[in-house]
Length: 133
Image (cartoon, rainbow, N blue to C red):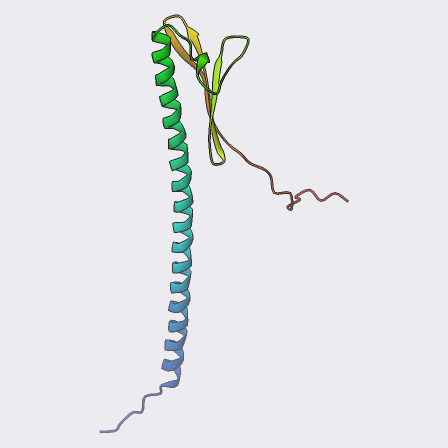
């Protein structure tokens, strides 16, 4: 029986290319997973802050409704402002978010006129999309 020699040159080259491709894909998968984790953490922090503001707002509405049922108005609460139309407003702040609530006494109770969550935002001054010379 005649022995056929196996040429390892092309096989070694193929295995090297496959190893490089697998290593590159592994590094990219790890980098993507880490970026997704960071984005999820940032989103979780944002949602936690927004829910904390919502809870503060709900407590304010509860206290305002109790005060209204007892015959007083929520205007006497600390940090509230009343405009000329009788709309009582209060602003809650946490981090870069703020919640503005406006209520008015109407008929048989209080009515929420406005409930807005805002985030402080400033445009990036370094980036100029419209180059003007």
